Figure 1 (tube, rainbow, N blue to C red):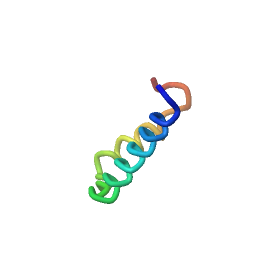
Figure 2 (cartoon, rainbow, N blue to C red):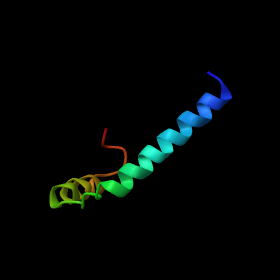
Figure 3 (cartoon, rainbow, N blue to C red):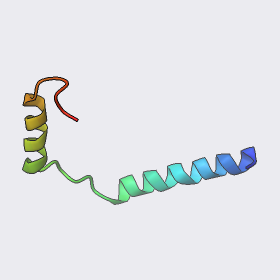
Length: 49
């Protein structure tokens, strides 16, 4: 793949990501997610997979 094609692909990918970020709202973190994070924080280091 040529350098020009790589740069165009990178630009298109970046613009698509930016467009999606602006178009779609970020979902707020729900309570179930917070419960899972709290569970894993309470585990001793090295015991999780």
